[in-house]
Length: 635
Image (cartoon, rainbow, N blue to C red; front, side):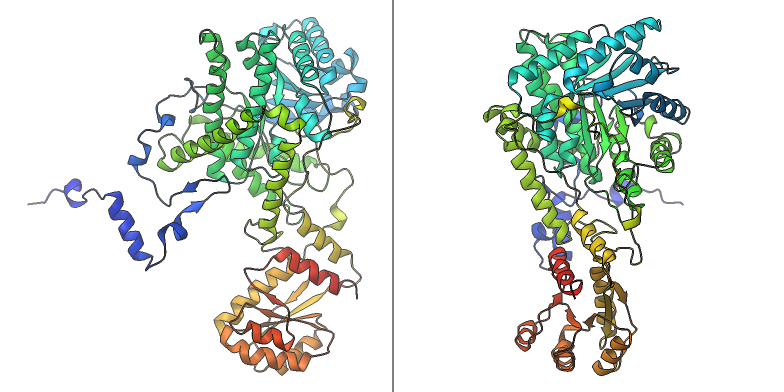
Protein backbone atom coordinates (compact mmCIF):
# COMPACT_ATOMS: atom_id res chain seq x y z
CA UNK A 1 0.00 0.00 0.00
CA UNK A 2 1.35 3.38 -1.01
CA UNK A 3 2.16 5.54 2.01
CA UNK A 4 0.62 9.00 1.95
CA UNK A 5 2.84 12.00 2.63
CA UNK A 6 2.06 14.21 5.57
CA UNK A 7 4.10 17.37 5.09
CA UNK A 8 3.14 18.83 8.46
CA UNK A 9 4.31 15.73 10.26
CA UNK A 10 7.41 15.14 8.15
CA UNK A 11 8.47 18.77 8.23
CA UNK A 12 7.51 20.18 11.63
CA UNK A 13 7.61 23.93 12.21
CA UNK A 14 10.96 25.28 13.31
CA UNK A 15 11.09 28.21 15.69
CA UNK A 16 13.18 31.30 15.16
CA UNK A 17 15.31 30.33 18.14
CA UNK A 18 16.08 26.95 16.55
CA UNK A 19 17.10 28.64 13.31
CA UNK A 20 19.32 31.09 15.13
CA UNK A 21 20.89 28.38 17.29
CA UNK A 22 21.74 26.42 14.14
CA UNK A 23 23.30 29.50 12.54
CA UNK A 24 25.36 30.23 15.66
CA UNK A 25 26.61 26.64 15.63
CA UNK A 26 27.63 26.96 11.98
CA UNK A 27 29.45 30.21 12.76
CA UNK A 28 31.81 28.20 14.97
CA UNK A 29 32.18 30.79 17.69
CA UNK A 30 31.92 33.95 15.57
CA UNK A 31 29.62 36.63 16.97
CA UNK A 32 26.18 36.46 15.29
CA UNK A 33 25.54 40.21 15.42
CA UNK A 34 29.00 41.22 14.21
CA UNK A 35 29.10 38.60 11.47
CA UNK A 36 25.60 38.63 10.04
CA UNK A 37 23.62 41.69 11.24
CA UNK A 38 24.05 44.53 8.76
CA UNK A 39 24.29 48.05 10.18
CA UNK A 40 23.02 50.23 7.34
CA UNK A 41 24.35 53.71 6.56
CA UNK A 42 20.82 54.89 7.34
CA UNK A 43 21.40 54.05 10.99
CA UNK A 44 19.38 50.89 11.62
CA UNK A 45 20.13 47.17 11.71
CA UNK A 46 19.02 44.59 9.15
CA UNK A 47 18.77 40.98 10.29
CA UNK A 48 20.11 38.12 8.14
CA UNK A 49 16.67 36.51 7.99
CA UNK A 50 13.05 37.42 8.71
CA UNK A 51 10.01 35.27 9.39
CA UNK A 52 6.24 35.68 9.36
CA UNK A 53 6.24 36.63 13.02
CA UNK A 54 8.30 39.71 12.11
CA UNK A 55 5.25 41.14 10.32
CA UNK A 56 3.19 41.33 13.50
CA UNK A 57 2.28 44.86 14.41
CA UNK A 58 3.60 46.42 11.19
CA UNK A 59 1.22 49.09 9.91
CA UNK A 60 2.50 48.69 6.36
CA UNK A 61 0.61 45.41 5.90
CA UNK A 62 -2.93 46.55 6.62
CA UNK A 63 -3.79 48.70 3.57
CA UNK A 64 -4.60 47.85 -0.03
CA UNK A 65 -3.36 49.53 -3.23
CA UNK A 66 -5.03 52.88 -3.78
CA UNK A 67 -6.19 53.16 -0.17
CA UNK A 68 -4.99 55.56 2.51
CA UNK A 69 -2.21 55.74 3.67
CA UNK A 70 -1.06 54.52 0.24
CA UNK A 71 1.97 52.51 1.34
CA UNK A 72 0.99 49.97 -1.33
CA UNK A 73 0.54 52.61 -4.00
CA UNK A 74 -1.76 55.43 -4.96
CA UNK A 75 -3.29 53.44 -7.83
CA UNK A 76 -4.82 50.01 -8.40
CA UNK A 77 -2.46 49.42 -11.32
CA UNK A 78 1.27 49.85 -11.80
CA UNK A 79 1.24 51.84 -15.02
CA UNK A 80 4.01 54.44 -14.77
CA UNK A 81 4.94 57.11 -17.31
CA UNK A 82 8.20 56.79 -19.27
CA UNK A 83 9.75 60.23 -19.34
CA UNK A 84 12.54 61.78 -21.36
CA UNK A 85 13.78 65.32 -20.80
CA UNK A 86 14.63 67.68 -23.64
CA UNK A 87 16.55 70.93 -23.46
CA UNK A 88 14.54 73.63 -25.25
CA UNK A 89 16.72 76.49 -24.02
CA UNK A 90 18.48 77.05 -27.33
CA UNK A 91 15.99 76.14 -30.04
CA UNK A 92 12.31 75.29 -29.39
CA UNK A 93 11.79 74.07 -32.97
CA UNK A 94 14.66 71.61 -32.65
CA UNK A 95 13.29 70.45 -29.30
CA UNK A 96 9.87 69.98 -30.88
CA UNK A 97 11.32 67.84 -33.66
CA UNK A 98 13.06 65.61 -31.12
CA UNK A 99 9.90 65.36 -29.01
CA UNK A 100 7.79 64.25 -31.98
CA UNK A 101 10.41 61.64 -32.84
CA UNK A 102 10.64 60.07 -29.38
CA UNK A 103 6.87 60.07 -28.91
CA UNK A 104 6.84 57.40 -31.61
CA UNK A 105 9.43 55.38 -29.70
CA UNK A 106 7.64 54.63 -26.45
CA UNK A 107 7.86 57.88 -24.48
CA UNK A 108 4.68 58.74 -22.55
CA UNK A 109 5.92 61.83 -20.70
CA UNK A 110 7.99 64.79 -21.86
CA UNK A 111 10.10 67.14 -19.79
CA UNK A 112 11.11 70.48 -21.31
CA UNK A 113 13.79 72.75 -19.87
CA UNK A 114 12.85 76.30 -20.92
CA UNK A 115 14.79 79.51 -21.43
CA UNK A 116 13.12 82.17 -19.29
CA UNK A 117 14.64 84.99 -21.30
CA UNK A 118 12.98 83.75 -24.51
CA UNK A 119 9.62 82.81 -23.01
CA UNK A 120 6.62 84.08 -25.00
CA UNK A 121 3.59 82.65 -26.78
CA UNK A 122 5.45 81.95 -30.05
CA UNK A 123 8.19 80.12 -28.15
CA UNK A 124 5.64 77.72 -26.60
CA UNK A 125 3.71 77.39 -29.87
CA UNK A 126 6.87 76.33 -31.71
CA UNK A 127 7.79 73.96 -28.91
CA UNK A 128 4.41 72.19 -28.79
CA UNK A 129 3.60 72.17 -32.51
CA UNK A 130 1.78 68.92 -33.48
CA UNK A 131 2.07 67.53 -29.93
CA UNK A 132 -1.29 66.49 -28.47
CA UNK A 133 -1.07 67.56 -24.82
CA UNK A 134 -4.05 65.33 -23.99
CA UNK A 135 -2.17 62.16 -24.95
CA UNK A 136 0.89 62.52 -22.71
CA UNK A 137 2.19 64.27 -19.60
CA UNK A 138 4.15 67.43 -20.36
CA UNK A 139 6.43 68.83 -17.68
CA UNK A 140 8.26 72.15 -17.67
CA UNK A 141 11.31 73.39 -15.79
CA UNK A 142 11.79 77.16 -15.66
CA UNK A 143 12.87 79.67 -13.04
CA UNK A 144 10.20 80.33 -10.44
CA UNK A 145 9.76 83.99 -11.32
CA UNK A 146 8.53 83.07 -14.83
CA UNK A 147 6.29 80.15 -13.82
CA UNK A 148 3.12 82.25 -13.64
CA UNK A 149 3.83 83.71 -17.09
CA UNK A 150 4.35 80.20 -18.46
CA UNK A 151 1.06 79.05 -16.94
CA UNK A 152 -0.78 81.96 -18.55
CA UNK A 153 0.73 81.13 -21.95
CA UNK A 154 -0.18 77.46 -21.61
CA UNK A 155 -3.77 78.30 -20.74
CA UNK A 156 -4.00 80.49 -23.85
CA UNK A 157 -2.32 77.92 -26.09
CA UNK A 158 -4.36 74.92 -24.86
CA UNK A 159 -7.52 76.99 -25.13
CA UNK A 160 -6.80 77.87 -28.76
CA UNK A 161 -6.12 74.19 -29.43
CA UNK A 162 -9.63 73.44 -28.18
CA UNK A 163 -8.50 71.19 -25.32
CA UNK A 164 -10.68 70.35 -22.37
CA UNK A 165 -8.48 71.66 -19.54
CA UNK A 166 -9.37 68.61 -17.44
CA UNK A 167 -7.82 66.39 -20.12
CA UNK A 168 -4.29 67.82 -19.98
CA UNK A 169 -1.79 66.55 -17.40
CA UNK A 170 1.66 67.72 -16.45
CA UNK A 171 3.68 69.92 -14.14
CA UNK A 172 5.63 73.16 -13.83
CA UNK A 173 8.57 72.66 -11.51
CA UNK A 174 8.36 75.69 -9.19
CA UNK A 175 10.76 75.11 -6.34
CA UNK A 176 12.38 78.22 -4.80
CA UNK A 177 14.12 76.16 -2.08
CA UNK A 178 15.87 74.20 -4.81
CA UNK A 179 17.37 77.45 -6.08
CA UNK A 180 18.53 78.25 -2.58
CA UNK A 181 20.27 74.88 -2.35
CA UNK A 182 21.92 74.71 -5.75
CA UNK A 183 22.40 78.40 -6.59
CA UNK A 184 22.71 79.95 -3.15
CA UNK A 185 19.79 82.37 -3.60
CA UNK A 186 19.01 84.00 -0.28
CA UNK A 187 15.21 84.19 -0.30
CA UNK A 188 12.87 85.15 2.50
CA UNK A 189 9.95 82.98 3.55
CA UNK A 190 7.62 85.63 2.12
CA UNK A 191 9.37 85.55 -1.25
CA UNK A 192 9.12 81.77 -1.44
CA UNK A 193 5.43 81.83 -0.53
CA UNK A 194 4.73 84.56 -3.07
CA UNK A 195 6.29 82.55 -5.92
CA UNK A 196 4.35 79.42 -4.99
CA UNK A 197 1.00 81.17 -4.64
CA UNK A 198 1.48 83.09 -7.90
CA UNK A 199 2.15 79.87 -9.79
CA UNK A 200 -0.86 78.11 -8.24
CA UNK A 201 -3.19 81.00 -9.03
CA UNK A 202 -1.96 81.17 -12.61
CA UNK A 203 -2.53 77.43 -13.04
CA UNK A 204 -6.06 77.24 -11.59
CA UNK A 205 -7.49 76.52 -15.04
CA UNK A 206 -5.04 73.64 -15.56
CA UNK A 207 -6.64 71.53 -12.86
CA UNK A 208 -4.44 68.49 -13.47
CA UNK A 209 -1.13 70.36 -13.44
CA UNK A 210 1.10 70.26 -10.37
CA UNK A 211 3.17 73.40 -10.02
CA UNK A 212 5.08 73.00 -6.74
CA UNK A 213 8.18 70.83 -6.94
CA UNK A 214 10.12 69.10 -4.16
CA UNK A 215 13.37 68.19 -5.90
CA UNK A 216 15.11 65.87 -3.49
CA UNK A 217 16.89 64.30 -6.48
CA UNK A 218 19.55 66.98 -5.95
CA UNK A 219 20.19 65.55 -2.49
CA UNK A 220 20.51 62.06 -3.94
CA UNK A 221 22.98 63.36 -6.53
CA UNK A 222 25.00 64.91 -3.71
CA UNK A 223 25.39 61.54 -1.99
CA UNK A 224 22.43 61.48 0.40
CA UNK A 225 21.40 58.06 1.65
CA UNK A 226 17.82 56.77 1.39
CA UNK A 227 16.55 57.81 4.82
CA UNK A 228 18.25 61.21 4.63
CA UNK A 229 16.79 62.03 1.21
CA UNK A 230 13.36 60.85 2.35
CA UNK A 231 13.41 62.84 5.61
CA UNK A 232 14.51 66.01 3.84
CA UNK A 233 11.96 65.55 1.04
CA UNK A 234 9.15 65.19 3.59
CA UNK A 235 10.30 68.24 5.55
CA UNK A 236 10.64 70.19 2.30
CA UNK A 237 7.09 69.29 1.26
CA UNK A 238 5.71 69.98 4.74
CA UNK A 239 7.20 73.49 4.68
CA UNK A 240 5.52 74.17 1.36
CA UNK A 241 2.22 72.86 2.75
CA UNK A 242 2.54 75.20 5.73
CA UNK A 243 3.47 78.22 3.59
CA UNK A 244 0.55 77.64 1.23
CA UNK A 245 -2.11 76.98 3.84
CA UNK A 246 -0.97 79.99 5.88
CA UNK A 247 -1.32 82.06 2.70
CA UNK A 248 -4.95 80.96 2.38
CA UNK A 249 -4.60 78.11 -0.11
CA UNK A 250 -7.04 75.31 0.83
CA UNK A 251 -5.28 72.31 2.36
CA UNK A 252 -6.44 69.86 -0.32
CA UNK A 253 -5.31 72.20 -3.11
CA UNK A 254 -1.92 72.79 -1.50
CA UNK A 255 -1.31 69.03 -1.20
CA UNK A 256 -2.56 68.35 -4.71
CA UNK A 257 -0.14 70.87 -6.23
CA UNK A 258 3.01 69.27 -4.80
CA UNK A 259 5.07 66.86 -6.87
CA UNK A 260 8.14 65.03 -5.59
CA UNK A 261 11.10 64.62 -7.94
CA UNK A 262 13.19 62.03 -6.12
CA UNK A 263 16.42 60.22 -6.88
CA UNK A 264 16.90 56.46 -7.08
CA UNK A 265 20.04 55.16 -5.41
CA UNK A 266 21.87 51.93 -6.12
CA UNK A 267 20.70 49.93 -3.08
CA UNK A 268 18.02 47.82 -4.77
CA UNK A 269 15.78 46.72 -1.91
CA UNK A 270 16.40 49.85 0.15
CA UNK A 271 15.08 52.02 -2.67
CA UNK A 272 11.92 49.94 -3.05
CA UNK A 273 11.30 50.37 0.66
CA UNK A 274 12.09 54.10 0.48
CA UNK A 275 9.32 54.88 -1.99
CA UNK A 276 6.81 52.75 -0.08
CA UNK A 277 7.73 54.51 3.16
CA UNK A 278 7.57 57.89 1.40
CA UNK A 279 3.91 57.45 0.43
CA UNK A 280 3.00 56.31 3.94
CA UNK A 281 4.70 59.22 5.70
CA UNK A 282 3.56 61.89 3.25
CA UNK A 283 -0.05 60.74 3.65
CA UNK A 284 0.32 61.08 7.42
CA UNK A 285 1.83 64.56 7.07
CA UNK A 286 -1.00 65.75 4.83
CA UNK A 287 -3.49 64.25 7.27
CA UNK A 288 -2.09 66.59 9.93
CA UNK A 289 -3.47 69.55 7.93
CA UNK A 290 -7.02 68.17 8.14
CA UNK A 291 -8.48 70.81 10.52
CA UNK A 292 -11.30 70.69 11.27
CA UNK A 293 -12.02 67.36 9.45
CA UNK A 294 -10.23 64.95 7.13
CA UNK A 295 -12.25 65.51 3.97
CA UNK A 296 -12.39 63.16 0.98
CA UNK A 297 -10.68 65.82 -1.14
CA UNK A 298 -7.75 66.06 1.27
CA UNK A 299 -7.48 62.27 1.52
CA UNK A 300 -7.25 62.08 -2.28
CA UNK A 301 -4.71 64.92 -2.32
CA UNK A 302 -2.57 62.98 0.16
CA UNK A 303 -1.60 60.62 -2.65
CA UNK A 304 2.08 61.32 -3.13
CA UNK A 305 2.98 61.99 -6.77
CA UNK A 306 6.56 60.89 -7.48
CA UNK A 307 8.77 61.33 -10.51
CA UNK A 308 11.83 59.16 -9.85
CA UNK A 309 15.17 59.76 -11.57
CA UNK A 310 18.18 57.46 -11.65
CA UNK A 311 21.13 58.71 -9.63
CA UNK A 312 24.04 60.62 -11.14
CA UNK A 313 26.12 60.12 -8.00
CA UNK A 314 27.23 56.57 -8.80
CA UNK A 315 27.65 57.00 -12.56
CA UNK A 316 31.15 56.78 -13.99
CA UNK A 317 33.21 57.93 -16.97
CA UNK A 318 35.41 54.83 -17.15
CA UNK A 319 33.70 51.56 -18.07
CA UNK A 320 30.60 53.62 -18.77
CA UNK A 321 28.51 50.69 -20.00
CA UNK A 322 28.36 49.57 -16.36
CA UNK A 323 26.14 52.65 -15.92
CA UNK A 324 23.50 50.63 -17.79
CA UNK A 325 23.53 48.03 -15.02
CA UNK A 326 23.31 50.71 -12.35
CA UNK A 327 20.42 52.57 -13.94
CA UNK A 328 18.59 49.34 -14.76
CA UNK A 329 18.51 48.09 -11.18
CA UNK A 330 17.55 51.59 -10.02
CA UNK A 331 14.71 51.69 -12.54
CA UNK A 332 13.54 48.29 -11.37
CA UNK A 333 13.45 49.55 -7.77
CA UNK A 334 11.30 52.54 -8.68
CA UNK A 335 8.99 50.54 -10.94
CA UNK A 336 8.38 47.82 -8.36
CA UNK A 337 7.79 50.51 -5.74
CA UNK A 338 4.95 52.01 -7.80
CA UNK A 339 6.19 55.52 -8.63
CA UNK A 340 4.27 57.64 -11.12
CA UNK A 341 7.01 58.51 -13.57
CA UNK A 342 10.62 57.47 -14.22
CA UNK A 343 13.55 59.24 -15.87
CA UNK A 344 16.55 57.08 -16.82
CA UNK A 345 19.82 58.97 -17.31
CA UNK A 346 21.67 57.86 -20.47
CA UNK A 347 24.85 55.90 -19.73
CA UNK A 348 27.13 58.53 -21.34
CA UNK A 349 25.77 61.56 -19.50
CA UNK A 350 28.92 61.85 -17.37
CA UNK A 351 31.19 62.75 -20.28
CA UNK A 352 29.11 64.12 -23.15
CA UNK A 353 25.70 65.39 -24.13
CA UNK A 354 23.95 62.04 -24.55
CA UNK A 355 24.00 60.58 -28.03
CA UNK A 356 20.91 59.39 -29.86
CA UNK A 357 22.03 55.80 -29.21
CA UNK A 358 22.41 56.36 -25.45
CA UNK A 359 18.99 58.02 -25.23
CA UNK A 360 17.44 55.15 -27.16
CA UNK A 361 18.94 52.62 -24.75
CA UNK A 362 17.66 54.67 -21.78
CA UNK A 363 14.12 54.57 -23.19
CA UNK A 364 14.35 50.87 -23.92
CA UNK A 365 15.43 50.10 -20.38
CA UNK A 366 11.94 51.04 -19.21
CA UNK A 367 10.20 49.48 -22.21
CA UNK A 368 11.86 46.16 -21.45
CA UNK A 369 10.53 46.25 -17.89
CA UNK A 370 7.03 46.85 -19.22
CA UNK A 371 6.84 44.81 -22.40
CA UNK A 372 9.05 41.85 -21.49
CA UNK A 373 9.28 41.72 -17.69
CA UNK A 374 5.66 42.92 -17.20
CA UNK A 375 6.52 45.05 -14.19
CA UNK A 376 3.46 47.17 -14.96
CA UNK A 377 1.14 44.20 -14.51
CA UNK A 378 1.72 43.67 -10.78
CA UNK A 379 0.84 46.16 -8.05
CA UNK A 380 3.25 46.33 -5.11
CA UNK A 381 4.94 42.91 -5.38
CA UNK A 382 6.90 43.82 -2.22
CA UNK A 383 3.73 43.45 -0.14
CA UNK A 384 3.98 40.63 2.38
CA UNK A 385 7.71 40.14 1.90
CA UNK A 386 9.09 39.65 5.41
CA UNK A 387 12.29 41.47 4.47
CA UNK A 388 10.81 44.37 2.48
CA UNK A 389 7.97 45.05 4.89
CA UNK A 390 10.47 45.30 7.75
CA UNK A 391 12.81 47.41 5.63
CA UNK A 392 9.94 49.76 4.77
CA UNK A 393 9.10 50.09 8.45
CA UNK A 394 12.74 50.70 9.43
CA UNK A 395 13.31 53.38 6.80
CA UNK A 396 10.03 55.05 7.72
CA UNK A 397 11.02 55.10 11.40
CA UNK A 398 14.49 56.53 10.70
CA UNK A 399 13.21 59.13 8.22
CA UNK A 400 10.47 60.17 10.64
CA UNK A 401 13.01 60.61 13.42
CA UNK A 402 15.07 62.89 11.17
CA UNK A 403 11.92 64.71 10.03
CA UNK A 404 10.95 65.50 13.62
CA UNK A 405 14.48 66.74 14.34
CA UNK A 406 14.16 69.16 11.41
CA UNK A 407 10.82 70.42 12.72
CA UNK A 408 12.36 71.04 16.14
CA UNK A 409 14.96 73.28 14.49
CA UNK A 410 12.37 75.44 12.74
CA UNK A 411 11.67 73.41 9.63
CA UNK A 412 13.44 72.69 6.37
CA UNK A 413 13.41 76.26 5.02
CA UNK A 414 15.03 77.69 8.14
CA UNK A 415 17.69 74.99 8.14
CA UNK A 416 18.48 75.71 4.48
CA UNK A 417 18.75 79.43 5.28
CA UNK A 418 21.17 78.61 8.07
CA UNK A 419 23.18 76.25 5.86
CA UNK A 420 22.52 73.29 8.15
CA UNK A 421 21.00 71.08 5.46
CA UNK A 422 23.92 71.78 3.16
CA UNK A 423 26.32 71.03 6.00
CA UNK A 424 24.63 67.72 6.82
CA UNK A 425 24.64 66.60 3.18
CA UNK A 426 28.29 67.63 2.83
CA UNK A 427 29.19 65.57 5.92
CA UNK A 428 27.37 62.58 4.49
CA UNK A 429 29.11 63.07 1.15
CA UNK A 430 32.50 63.19 2.86
CA UNK A 431 31.75 59.91 4.63
CA UNK A 432 30.62 58.23 1.42
CA UNK A 433 33.66 59.41 -0.52
CA UNK A 434 35.85 58.04 2.28
CA UNK A 435 34.10 54.68 1.87
CA UNK A 436 34.69 54.84 -1.88
CA UNK A 437 38.36 55.65 -1.28
CA UNK A 438 38.69 52.55 0.91
CA UNK A 439 36.51 50.43 -1.40
CA UNK A 440 33.92 49.88 1.30
CA UNK A 441 31.55 51.24 -1.34
CA UNK A 442 32.40 49.64 -4.67
CA UNK A 443 32.14 51.33 -8.05
CA UNK A 444 32.76 48.65 -10.63
CA UNK A 445 35.26 49.83 -13.23
CA UNK A 446 36.50 52.75 -11.14
CA UNK A 447 37.71 51.75 -7.69
CA UNK A 448 37.38 48.01 -8.26
CA UNK A 449 37.99 45.74 -11.27
CA UNK A 450 38.86 48.51 -13.76
CA UNK A 451 39.17 47.95 -17.48
CA UNK A 452 42.98 47.80 -17.66
CA UNK A 453 43.37 49.15 -21.19
CA UNK A 454 40.61 51.77 -21.36
CA UNK A 455 41.40 55.40 -22.28
CA UNK A 456 38.80 58.08 -21.59
CA UNK A 457 40.31 61.55 -22.04
CA UNK A 458 39.34 61.89 -25.71
CA UNK A 459 35.69 61.02 -25.16
CA UNK A 460 35.09 63.70 -22.52
CA UNK A 461 33.26 66.68 -24.04
CA UNK A 462 32.82 70.19 -22.68
CA UNK A 463 29.04 69.91 -23.04
CA UNK A 464 28.81 66.84 -20.82
CA UNK A 465 25.51 66.43 -19.02
CA UNK A 466 21.90 66.60 -20.06
CA UNK A 467 18.91 68.40 -18.66
CA UNK A 468 17.58 66.35 -15.82
CA UNK A 469 14.42 67.12 -13.90
CA UNK A 470 16.54 69.96 -12.56
CA UNK A 471 17.67 72.23 -15.38
CA UNK A 472 21.43 72.11 -15.81
CA UNK A 473 21.42 74.95 -18.32
CA UNK A 474 22.51 78.44 -17.30
CA UNK A 475 20.39 80.49 -19.66
CA UNK A 476 18.26 82.24 -17.07
CA UNK A 477 19.65 85.52 -15.81
CA UNK A 478 17.11 85.63 -13.00
CA UNK A 479 18.64 82.46 -11.53
CA UNK A 480 21.92 84.18 -10.62
CA UNK A 481 22.60 84.13 -6.89
CA UNK A 482 22.21 87.42 -5.04
CA UNK A 483 24.85 89.03 -2.87
CA UNK A 484 25.21 87.44 0.54
CA UNK A 485 24.24 84.08 -0.94
CA UNK A 486 23.75 81.12 1.37
CA UNK A 487 25.88 77.94 1.17
CA UNK A 488 25.08 75.57 -1.68
CA UNK A 489 24.91 71.79 -1.85
CA UNK A 490 28.14 70.00 -2.72
CA UNK A 491 28.22 68.62 -6.25
CA UNK A 492 30.14 65.41 -6.77
CA UNK A 493 30.09 61.93 -8.21
CA UNK A 494 31.50 59.07 -6.19
CA UNK A 495 34.03 58.09 -8.85
CA UNK A 496 35.40 61.55 -9.65
CA UNK A 497 38.61 61.37 -7.63
CA UNK A 498 39.53 57.96 -9.00
CA UNK A 499 38.77 59.21 -12.50
CA UNK A 500 41.01 62.23 -11.98
CA UNK A 501 43.84 59.94 -10.93
CA UNK A 502 43.45 57.84 -14.02
CA UNK A 503 43.15 60.85 -16.31
CA UNK A 504 46.37 62.25 -14.82
CA UNK A 505 48.12 59.00 -15.68
CA UNK A 506 46.60 59.02 -19.14
CA UNK A 507 47.90 62.53 -19.75
CA UNK A 508 51.41 61.81 -18.46
CA UNK A 509 54.36 61.41 -20.81
CA UNK A 510 54.93 57.90 -19.56
CA UNK A 511 52.44 55.32 -18.34
CA UNK A 512 53.89 53.62 -15.23
CA UNK A 513 54.40 49.87 -15.57
CA UNK A 514 53.67 47.64 -12.58
CA UNK A 515 55.29 44.20 -12.63
CA UNK A 516 54.05 41.33 -10.45
CA UNK A 517 57.00 39.44 -8.96
CA UNK A 518 55.11 36.26 -8.13
CA UNK A 519 56.96 33.67 -6.10
CA UNK A 520 56.40 30.95 -3.53
CA UNK A 521 52.98 29.62 -2.42
CA UNK A 522 50.90 29.17 -5.59
CA UNK A 523 47.47 30.08 -4.20
CA UNK A 524 48.69 33.15 -2.32
CA UNK A 525 50.84 34.55 -5.12
CA UNK A 526 47.97 34.23 -7.63
CA UNK A 527 45.46 35.86 -5.26
CA UNK A 528 47.79 38.70 -4.35
CA UNK A 529 48.84 39.33 -7.94
CA UNK A 530 45.20 39.63 -8.99
CA UNK A 531 44.49 41.96 -6.08
CA UNK A 532 47.53 44.11 -6.90
CA UNK A 533 46.74 44.30 -10.61
CA UNK A 534 43.25 45.58 -9.83
CA UNK A 535 44.59 47.94 -7.18
CA UNK A 536 47.17 49.62 -9.41
CA UNK A 537 45.06 49.60 -12.57
CA UNK A 538 42.63 51.91 -10.75
CA UNK A 539 45.25 54.62 -11.34
CA UNK A 540 45.68 53.65 -14.98
CA UNK A 541 49.02 51.90 -14.61
CA UNK A 542 49.97 49.17 -17.06
CA UNK A 543 50.08 45.91 -15.11
CA UNK A 544 52.06 42.81 -16.02
CA UNK A 545 51.09 39.60 -14.25
CA UNK A 546 53.27 36.48 -14.22
CA UNK A 547 52.94 32.77 -13.52
CA UNK A 548 55.79 32.70 -11.01
CA UNK A 549 59.56 32.88 -10.64
CA UNK A 550 62.03 30.42 -9.12
CA UNK A 551 63.96 33.15 -7.32
CA UNK A 552 63.70 36.81 -6.37
CA UNK A 553 66.70 37.60 -8.57
CA UNK A 554 65.02 36.01 -11.60
CA UNK A 555 61.87 38.05 -10.98
CA UNK A 556 63.75 41.35 -10.66
CA UNK A 557 65.71 40.60 -13.80
CA UNK A 558 62.46 40.00 -15.72
CA UNK A 559 60.94 43.18 -14.27
CA UNK A 560 63.87 45.27 -15.47
CA UNK A 561 63.68 43.68 -18.89
CA UNK A 562 60.01 44.79 -18.97
CA UNK A 563 61.16 48.32 -17.96
CA UNK A 564 58.93 48.23 -14.90
CA UNK A 565 58.49 51.32 -12.75
CA UNK A 566 56.88 49.32 -9.94
CA UNK A 567 57.82 45.86 -8.71
CA UNK A 568 55.14 44.18 -6.57
CA UNK A 569 56.23 41.19 -4.51
CA UNK A 570 53.37 38.67 -4.40
CA UNK A 571 53.75 35.72 -2.07
CA UNK A 572 52.50 34.38 1.28
CA UNK A 573 52.87 36.08 4.66
CA UNK A 574 55.31 33.46 5.94
CA UNK A 575 57.52 33.69 2.88
CA UNK A 576 57.68 37.49 2.93
CA UNK A 577 60.09 37.29 5.86
CA UNK A 578 62.62 35.79 3.45
CA UNK A 579 61.69 37.08 0.00
CA UNK A 580 61.05 40.75 0.88
CA UNK A 581 64.51 41.42 2.43
CA UNK A 582 66.14 39.64 -0.55
CA UNK A 583 64.26 41.83 -3.02
CA UNK A 584 64.87 45.01 -1.02
CA UNK A 585 68.59 44.31 -0.77
CA UNK A 586 68.85 43.84 -4.53
CA UNK A 587 66.68 46.90 -5.28
CA UNK A 588 68.11 49.25 -2.65
CA UNK A 589 69.00 52.56 -4.31
CA UNK A 590 67.36 51.50 -7.59
CA UNK A 591 64.80 53.64 -9.44
CA UNK A 592 61.96 51.10 -9.24
CA UNK A 593 59.24 51.48 -6.60
CA UNK A 594 59.01 48.35 -4.45
CA UNK A 595 55.65 47.20 -3.05
CA UNK A 596 54.74 44.23 -0.87
CA UNK A 597 51.26 42.85 -1.56
CA UNK A 598 49.70 42.23 1.84
CA UNK A 599 50.05 43.15 5.50
CA UNK A 600 52.23 40.32 6.87
CA UNK A 601 53.01 39.80 10.53
CA UNK A 602 56.61 40.74 9.75
CA UNK A 603 55.58 44.17 8.40
CA UNK A 604 57.26 46.11 11.21
CA UNK A 605 60.54 44.26 10.62
CA UNK A 606 60.31 44.99 6.90
CA UNK A 607 59.60 48.65 7.59
CA UNK A 608 62.73 48.83 9.72
CA UNK A 609 64.68 47.69 6.67
CA UNK A 610 63.25 50.63 4.74
CA UNK A 611 60.33 48.97 2.93
CA UNK A 612 57.44 51.43 3.12
CA UNK A 613 54.92 50.40 0.48
CA UNK A 614 52.32 47.75 1.39
CA UNK A 615 48.97 47.33 -0.37
CA UNK A 616 46.18 45.32 1.22
CA UNK A 617 42.42 45.34 1.81
CA UNK A 618 42.65 47.83 4.70
CA UNK A 619 44.40 50.43 2.56
CA UNK A 620 42.91 53.74 1.59
CA UNK A 621 43.21 52.95 -2.10
CA UNK A 622 42.68 56.50 -3.28
CA UNK A 623 45.23 58.12 -0.98
CA UNK A 624 47.77 55.38 -1.69
CA UNK A 625 47.42 55.84 -5.45
CA UNK A 626 47.60 59.62 -5.12
CA UNK A 627 50.92 59.17 -3.33
CA UNK A 628 52.17 56.83 -6.05
CA UNK A 629 51.08 59.23 -8.78
CA UNK A 630 52.97 62.08 -7.15
CA UNK A 631 56.15 59.97 -7.18
CA UNK A 632 55.79 58.28 -10.55
CA UNK A 633 54.31 60.99 -12.77
CA UNK A 634 56.65 63.77 -11.65
CA UNK A 635 59.86 61.98 -12.58
